[in-house]
Image (cartoon, rainbow over all chains, first blue to last red; front, side, top):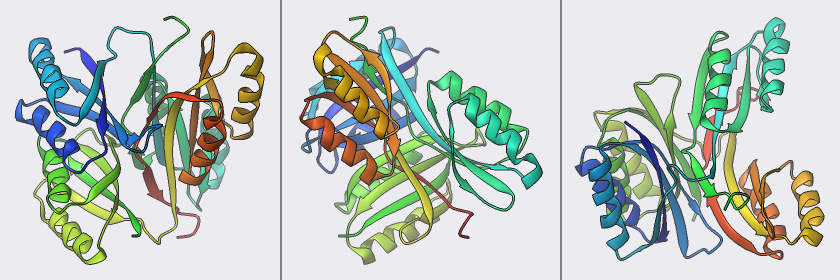
Length: 161
Length: 161
């Protein structure tokens, strides 16, 4: 099933998020990723969701979202020219003798080392999903100890508007 | 009120997120930021929330979370040595004559230009909250057109364990 990136500009009120998440989960949609953060205006938050599911039902949900009192605007970025990014913090096993190898991999992916322990390093990586997945795939053979990942965010490109 | 970063490792099942968000919103907690993403194990997701609220009630909610069937582990990173990061995509007004100034600011903050239009640029910036806020503050005078922000994520440091 095709993945959709749904972005909603909402009023920054308690309950809006619970309402939106409930709308999707009541229809059995699994939310692959979710990002909720501030916007340029402190009154509003932007909620970005990646969901996969039946196109028709998704269209219904999108319309329902649009009708919610506290939802200002809903966009679906699928099939549009958008910049998509997510951020991962990952701690990888790396004894001192292996550290250089891990650091080289990070460098190739323009990732940054943000913490070093006796037998591990923590890496911060940002990018499109396929780039992030590629690095994680390469790091997996060293052993991923722990990982935290934000949901994906997106903004429309103006260079191809 | 002190902000808390709550990180929960949960089973990747429809409904868990709705349940968690509901638990906070039923008690009137405003969720400042929320990040839901995959982990090293496809069976589990990690939910990171930044919430501010009464300490005692928060402690109750944390205990309730811990008891949820699909929640594996709950951590509160406040007061611990943790790496905290969030990611912002921000489109800034920048006519060609102003572009260099904006690009210089981005460079100082190790931010990246990810799209350029006729009269705007899009910047990707990652960091601790104060760094990100500082750059956004400087960009505001050029005019922030649009912005998307992930929730904050965090992992404990092992360098000061």
